[in-house]
Length: 330
Image (tube, rainbow, N blue to C red; front, side, top):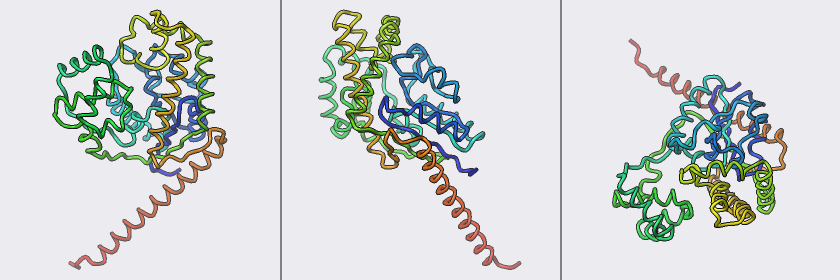
């Protein structure tokens, strides 16, 4: 077994089959799984976030699955800190660990590290949230377009959390939010092998529609109804719940809410694809590819890493020997 620390990172759109593949890979390498799905952190949200089944969770040790409450403040910065600490412990036991998820920002936080942003005042945050509630997302989008056109052209403009976060920095620092991006490259003590699952868009959309129908059959409506009193919490501003809240409050029929869940999940999958396609290091496989073929690919990649590591050690030894030859005799 090679000694180099390797993180096998499995990505792809929602409903593509990442969980099943990650379990087979983790079992093959006798290792554990880190979940990088930000929606699956919360113990109160089970059906609507497609948490792995109890059977799947028992088959391999998973981390960051339903480990937090919706009442806790947990963000990508907290996840980066916790996951990197956990990885350090896992690598002491096994040089290979698996990470799986569809939350691109959370995956990048582990692989590359987060950018450091300045603190902002609570007053600015409150003011921006008031502007959002009174004037709508369009008002904030226009402000971002004026103050930081670079970030405006790359951010998901419908994600009001990210729009507000960018404007917090713009208003407080009087500088574009994008000027703080990629300001510091963090070094990690592991190499990453990216595995991506993909399918034709219509197939992904069909899978999504089927999954939503299955969620409804499993009791998503009842689960969401229990969470209605807490609908303003950040954790619940997500697909599968916010649409049903409208149904409970009478602004949509049940059928409309279900169709809206499907539509918004399809949009989410499209954004996932856009995010992951920017990463040229991802090795893409059709979702029908057998796990054995993908595992063989990983084994080959591990051999490449091992050869590079051995070459590096040989070069160091050669340099040391050359230096010793030219040391003055005493």
